[in-house]
Amino acid sequence: MPKINGNEIRPGNILEHDGGLWGAVKVSHVKPGKGGAFAQVELKNLRDGRKLNERFRSEDKVERVRLDQKDQQFLYETDGKLVFMDSETFEQTELDADLLGDRRPFLQDGMTATIEYYGEEALSVSIPQKVTCIVAETEPVVKGQTAANSYKPAILDNGVRIMIPPFVGEGEAIIVNTEVFEYSERA
Image (cartoon, rainbow, N blue to C red):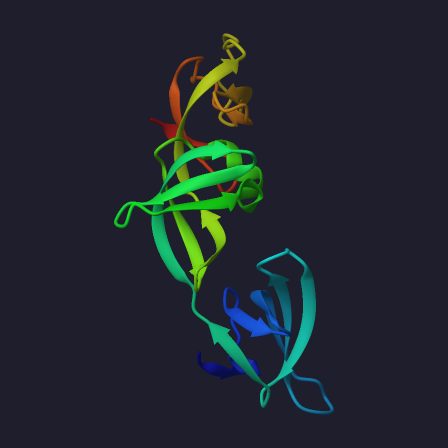
Protein backbone atom coordinates (compact mmCIF):
# COMPACT_ATOMS: atom_id res chain seq x y z
CA MET A 1 0.00 0.00 0.00
CA PRO A 2 1.29 3.48 -0.80
CA LYS A 3 2.55 5.74 1.95
CA ILE A 4 1.67 9.42 1.66
CA ASN A 5 2.93 12.49 3.48
CA GLY A 6 0.78 14.05 6.21
CA ASN A 7 0.11 17.16 4.09
CA GLU A 8 -1.31 15.03 1.22
CA ILE A 9 -4.30 13.76 3.22
CA ARG A 10 -7.62 14.75 1.65
CA PRO A 11 -11.24 14.29 2.84
CA GLY A 12 -12.47 10.84 1.81
CA ASN A 13 -9.04 9.19 2.02
CA ILE A 14 -8.95 5.88 3.89
CA LEU A 15 -5.90 5.60 6.17
CA GLU A 16 -4.37 2.81 8.23
CA HIS A 17 -3.54 4.50 11.54
CA ASP A 18 -3.07 3.17 15.11
CA GLY A 19 -3.86 -0.38 13.95
CA GLY A 20 -7.27 0.52 12.50
CA LEU A 21 -8.91 1.75 9.31
CA TRP A 22 -9.93 5.42 9.43
CA GLY A 23 -11.72 7.66 6.94
CA ALA A 24 -10.63 11.30 6.76
CA VAL A 25 -13.79 13.38 7.34
CA LYS A 26 -12.37 16.92 7.60
CA VAL A 27 -8.88 18.18 6.82
CA SER A 28 -7.58 21.66 7.55
CA HIS A 29 -4.03 22.81 6.91
CA VAL A 30 -2.60 25.00 9.67
CA LYS A 31 0.47 27.24 9.38
CA PRO A 32 1.25 28.57 12.85
CA GLY A 33 3.51 31.60 13.32
CA LYS A 34 6.04 29.45 15.14
CA GLY A 35 6.97 25.89 14.22
CA GLY A 36 6.18 23.81 11.15
CA ALA A 37 2.92 23.53 9.27
CA PHE A 38 0.63 20.58 9.91
CA ALA A 39 -2.67 19.07 8.80
CA GLN A 40 -5.42 18.85 11.44
CA VAL A 41 -7.44 15.77 10.41
CA GLU A 42 -10.77 14.54 11.80
CA LEU A 43 -10.83 10.75 11.38
CA LYS A 44 -13.72 8.28 11.70
CA ASN A 45 -13.10 4.60 12.39
CA LEU A 46 -14.69 2.51 9.63
CA ARG A 47 -15.26 -0.51 11.87
CA ASP A 48 -16.79 0.96 15.04
CA GLY A 49 -17.58 4.61 14.19
CA ARG A 50 -15.26 6.22 16.78
CA LYS A 51 -13.97 9.71 15.95
CA LEU A 52 -10.43 10.98 16.43
CA ASN A 53 -8.68 14.31 15.83
CA GLU A 54 -5.06 13.93 14.80
CA ARG A 55 -2.24 16.23 13.68
CA PHE A 56 0.03 15.14 10.85
CA ARG A 57 3.17 17.08 9.99
CA SER A 58 4.31 17.09 6.36
CA GLU A 59 7.21 14.73 7.15
CA ASP A 60 4.89 12.14 8.80
CA LYS A 61 4.19 9.11 6.59
CA VAL A 62 0.73 7.50 6.60
CA GLU A 63 -0.54 4.32 4.91
CA ARG A 64 -3.27 5.13 2.38
CA VAL A 65 -5.66 2.24 1.77
CA ARG A 66 -7.68 1.60 -1.37
CA LEU A 67 -11.02 -0.14 -0.91
CA ASP A 68 -12.49 -2.45 -3.54
CA GLN A 69 -16.03 -1.56 -4.62
CA LYS A 70 -18.47 -4.20 -5.82
CA ASP A 71 -22.05 -3.75 -6.96
CA GLN A 72 -24.23 -6.40 -5.32
CA GLN A 73 -27.94 -7.15 -5.36
CA PHE A 74 -29.96 -7.02 -2.13
CA LEU A 75 -31.85 -10.26 -1.52
CA TYR A 76 -33.43 -10.20 1.96
CA GLU A 77 -33.01 -9.31 5.65
CA THR A 78 -32.76 -11.87 8.45
CA ASP A 79 -32.01 -11.36 12.17
CA GLY A 80 -30.64 -7.82 11.70
CA LYS A 81 -28.41 -8.93 8.82
CA LEU A 82 -28.76 -7.81 5.20
CA VAL A 83 -27.99 -10.48 2.60
CA PHE A 84 -26.46 -9.35 -0.71
CA MET A 85 -25.48 -11.41 -3.76
CA ASP A 86 -22.59 -10.81 -6.17
CA SER A 87 -24.19 -10.87 -9.64
CA GLU A 88 -21.03 -12.33 -11.26
CA THR A 89 -20.00 -15.08 -8.82
CA PHE A 90 -23.42 -15.52 -7.11
CA GLU A 91 -21.66 -15.51 -3.71
CA GLN A 92 -23.76 -14.19 -0.84
CA THR A 93 -22.54 -11.64 1.73
CA GLU A 94 -24.18 -10.92 5.09
CA LEU A 95 -23.79 -7.42 6.55
CA ASP A 96 -25.14 -5.68 9.66
CA ALA A 97 -28.26 -3.62 8.93
CA ASP A 98 -26.68 -0.86 11.08
CA LEU A 99 -24.22 -0.09 8.24
CA LEU A 100 -27.00 1.75 6.36
CA GLY A 101 -28.16 3.70 9.41
CA ASP A 102 -31.29 5.80 8.84
CA ARG A 103 -31.26 5.07 5.07
CA ARG A 104 -32.21 1.42 5.77
CA PRO A 105 -35.94 1.86 4.91
CA PHE A 106 -35.02 2.87 1.33
CA LEU A 107 -33.30 -0.48 0.62
CA GLN A 108 -35.71 -2.44 -1.61
CA ASP A 109 -35.74 -6.08 -2.76
CA GLY A 110 -33.55 -6.59 -5.82
CA MET A 111 -31.89 -3.16 -5.46
CA THR A 112 -28.24 -2.90 -6.48
CA ALA A 113 -26.04 -1.47 -3.72
CA THR A 114 -22.30 -0.69 -3.74
CA ILE A 115 -20.33 -2.48 -1.04
CA GLU A 116 -16.76 -1.43 -0.15
CA TYR A 117 -14.34 -4.19 0.81
CA TYR A 118 -10.96 -4.16 2.53
CA GLY A 119 -9.57 -7.54 1.53
CA GLU A 120 -12.46 -9.90 2.34
CA GLU A 121 -14.04 -7.63 5.00
CA ALA A 122 -17.09 -5.55 3.98
CA LEU A 123 -16.87 -2.08 5.56
CA SER A 124 -19.68 0.03 4.09
CA VAL A 125 -22.82 -0.10 1.95
CA SER A 126 -24.19 2.71 -0.18
CA ILE A 127 -27.57 2.68 -1.92
CA PRO A 128 -28.55 4.71 -5.00
CA GLN A 129 -29.01 8.44 -4.40
CA LYS A 130 -32.53 8.43 -5.89
CA VAL A 131 -35.13 5.78 -5.03
CA THR A 132 -38.75 5.42 -6.21
CA CYS A 133 -41.34 5.21 -3.40
CA ILE A 134 -45.14 5.26 -3.20
CA VAL A 135 -46.97 7.90 -1.12
CA ALA A 136 -48.99 5.84 1.39
CA GLU A 137 -50.62 8.65 3.36
CA THR A 138 -50.92 12.42 2.97
CA GLU A 139 -53.30 15.29 3.60
CA PRO A 140 -55.76 16.35 0.88
CA VAL A 141 -55.01 19.50 -1.08
CA VAL A 142 -56.51 22.68 0.36
CA LYS A 143 -58.09 24.74 -2.43
CA GLY A 144 -56.30 28.03 -2.97
CA GLN A 145 -53.07 26.81 -1.38
CA THR A 146 -50.84 27.57 -4.34
CA ALA A 147 -47.95 29.34 -2.64
CA ALA A 148 -44.66 28.47 -4.32
CA ASN A 149 -43.01 26.92 -1.26
CA SER A 150 -45.95 25.19 0.41
CA TYR A 151 -45.27 21.55 1.20
CA LYS A 152 -47.37 19.02 3.08
CA PRO A 153 -46.30 16.04 5.23
CA ALA A 154 -46.52 12.53 3.79
CA ILE A 155 -45.75 8.98 4.89
CA LEU A 156 -44.16 6.73 2.26
CA ASP A 157 -44.80 3.01 1.74
CA ASN A 158 -41.58 2.27 3.70
CA GLY A 159 -42.75 4.27 6.75
CA VAL A 160 -40.48 7.31 6.21
CA ARG A 161 -41.99 10.77 6.74
CA ILE A 162 -41.06 13.50 4.24
CA MET A 163 -42.51 16.76 2.93
CA ILE A 164 -44.03 16.71 -0.57
CA PRO A 165 -45.56 19.34 -2.88
CA PRO A 166 -49.33 19.85 -2.64
CA PHE A 167 -50.03 18.44 -6.13
CA VAL A 168 -48.83 14.92 -5.17
CA GLY A 169 -51.56 12.64 -3.83
CA GLU A 170 -51.86 9.25 -2.13
CA GLY A 171 -50.84 6.24 -4.21
CA GLU A 172 -48.54 8.24 -6.50
CA ALA A 173 -44.97 7.13 -7.18
CA ILE A 174 -42.33 9.73 -6.40
CA ILE A 175 -38.52 9.79 -6.49
CA VAL A 176 -36.85 10.54 -3.13
CA ASN A 177 -33.27 11.73 -2.59
CA THR A 178 -31.89 9.26 -0.01
CA GLU A 179 -29.02 11.53 1.08
CA VAL A 180 -31.20 14.43 2.29
CA PHE A 181 -34.59 12.61 2.66
CA GLU A 182 -36.39 15.04 0.34
CA TYR A 183 -38.87 14.83 -2.52
CA SER A 184 -37.03 15.03 -5.83
CA GLU A 185 -39.62 14.54 -8.59
CA ARG A 186 -42.59 12.49 -9.76
CA ALA A 187 -41.74 9.00 -11.00
